[in-house]
Length: 94
Image (tube, rainbow, N blue to C red; front, side, top):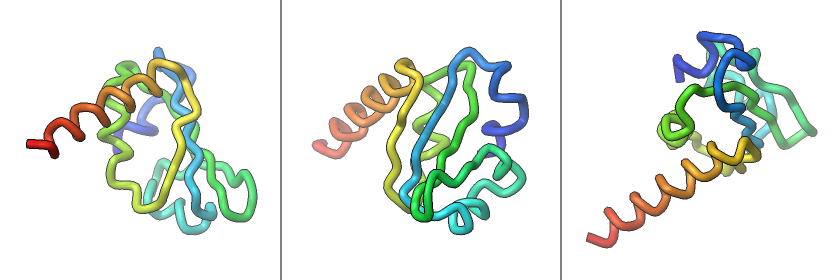
C-alpha cells in the first residue's frame, strides 16, 4: 500500500476511485499514513481516491482488502481489474 499515497493523486496518469463497504473508522487503519486518501460516503461506505501511473499495478494494491469494494474509476483502472480477475480465474482452473 505504500505507493498509494507517496505522491499527490493528481500527479498520476490514472485516477483510482474505490468504494469500500466498511465504515471509515474500520478502513483507516488498513491504509495507515495514507488514510488521508479516504472519505466517508456514509456510515458504512468509504471512498478511496488516489492515483497510479500504471493502471495494471492497482489490482495488486487492493487484493488483500478484507471487505467488498467497487472500482469506480478511471476506465483503465477498471479494465486492469477485469484483466487481473481473468488471469486469476484461469490460474485457479489449473
